[in-house]
Image (cartoon, one colour):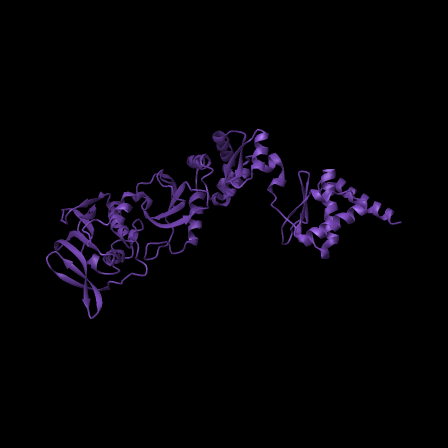
Length: 455
């Protein structure tokens, strides 16, 4: 029994199957086959697995059936080509050719399928696969037959790939949008993996693992990527740029893509405002309108890790929390959809930290010194955050809450700490911002009172 992969074809010169580096497709940017090596390395990889590979076609010399076989010569396993007329042709390969990079089942079957798909792309001719019980020449066809020589059965690893062909090839995918940079495909309904699949010329060439807890609703076919001889992306860093250029060139006909994204917000692992460049800014009303049309005017995007207190507070106020990735939440907020901060105040966006024992002692001493100077400050109502670098704030006052940067909670910076405690406390008590002239007046009153108290 054999797995048979067939395409309708004209003559295929048998020398193209024998000679390394010879390819009829090198100048065709639409086809996957370019290197002239896959038609040799794949059958040799099959031999290493104990599989038989037979190429069947015709050329100017007539019909042929060509089997890859191994012959031991002086302790070296040479690959030879054995034809159905008993002709044996030598090669320059050994059984170990390509063994460092050609080793998995998909690489082997990919070559046979890619050749069939290439023929379909180039001429529109049909292709198919089947399980058959013998090898034969059929006029107008080129076929590859593969069997497990140990069992006489088709290699079921190969059959499984063929039965799930849309995981590996894009030919049946529904295109959502596309441009000169490639195409966007929606994931198949039966594909529950958390991988973003990258295709090139119809063949899967890369995968991107998405964040835990999320899926992804798109796969991509990219035109501007470079492959190595294993048919894998040579430079994975170039993928992001290709996707950005693909997504950045949408027009009004692609607003349906926005609806797909926003209808599946808990599945979108990766979304970057910068991906959409200027067009996203032009589309902001569309994103907000689409979000509200799907989820309602009271829908608020929340990061998936939001705690129950935040959810409860929003629901108490009549809002509908919808969990999304942080990146998608940022995009929606830029588009004009209300954020957590709009409803509950900016304090809910500050990541707080705890003080260690020495910092706690330092902070309590600073509070005590403030109160000794007649500032009535409750130190237990302060929270702490961590930021460093040029321009990092010493403190924050948000929605009636006071925050201190832990970087200044130390004995060698206690004067700065005391000043920041009083400063942020004044913000909360007065409600004035730094830009308000009345706030400077409060600080001046403090200075005057302190001087009077010391005289």
